[in-house]
Length: 531
Image (cartoon, rainbow, N blue to C red; front, side, top):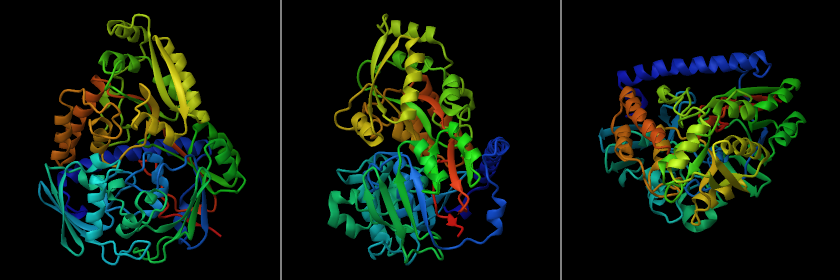
């Protein structure tokens, strides 16, 4: 089904939801404007975009990989989006599907998706991005031993080339989420010619079909991309190139924009808005995202295989105080993985776990831990993460938890917890979101998912509810299925969500045309620079 064929009930449902999001965005924008945070976009609308210039971005993390198939961090998307176009795209606020490399699509029956591709698209090495290339990529992502996104494509039965520019997907069962799944990593097309020649070197030598092509990557220092002159979209991109300066300390990153060394910084802390306010040549944006700070749990072994221990963890956290201390109150206390701005958010679960250290201690005692419980936690080593750790040490200590943190850089921490060694009982990190909530819930909890460290599914009924969420198409039916899924996850404490982070970005006044999105992962397709 392409965007022109969506049923009226789907559009009607989304229309109401979009209004809620606009209201949220308006409230945020109003508050930020009052504080001098947001720059006006009216001037941008009055001036035509110009081509040229190199955008310099301060980004807070080193990529885990620049091959979409093997990456292990949601932060990678900021670089991946520049080099890899996706089969489908999504509306920035509604997260509804739009054409990408696929110009038209249709479910001919519940288990068959036919996709027609844009003509004349080439990879950066000059090879064609055609139906054969799409089949190669999808087969590679679901079968290659190095792939970390096999579970994204678990519903695929077969990928058939049914024309030079047509691909037909056969599904094991109905899966309406697949379109938006293919707007994420699984839909990023890598040159088959390059992938076959490079093997594992593809992690560091990306060859996509996006608006910019890879130039170089210096670990923990810089990623550079340059305009692809044969890009298939007319008159795009505007920028000649982008340089990503990897600056893990966000204070340093913001100062680099203030001084003009860089022109854009993202992932900033709310407390940094004061510096943005003082800088006459900067404008800021604070917008809701799907970015949730949380504990990933290894419930494949003791002690977190006991739901009472997991529930005690949820009861041991004062989310309101955590939000005020770490997000300046701009964030959103979270009991689920979807923020209030999301169309599938389940409002009845917002206060599922109120701060109750006494009840947490009682549950620990019932689980056989009368003297409290020590947990080994994998965590990030940046300054803001350390602050979060200190707050949780204090809060959860009152409930009888003794947390022992082992700190690593983001990519290393992720590998420690989810990799072969499965170190740690839990991982204090963040979930950066996916375009379709079904993919989020599948990746978080399915027993064969990379992000399920325990590789077990302890929640009765979860798999069945997951299937319901992708077997229906109307928004009201999907929301009902997602409500059931979220309730199972909350009741069984399959994760410990803490707070939704709103993304704060700082832009130099020369940066024009930037549009934030609900995923909270910057895209630069509409950005141009004033001379």
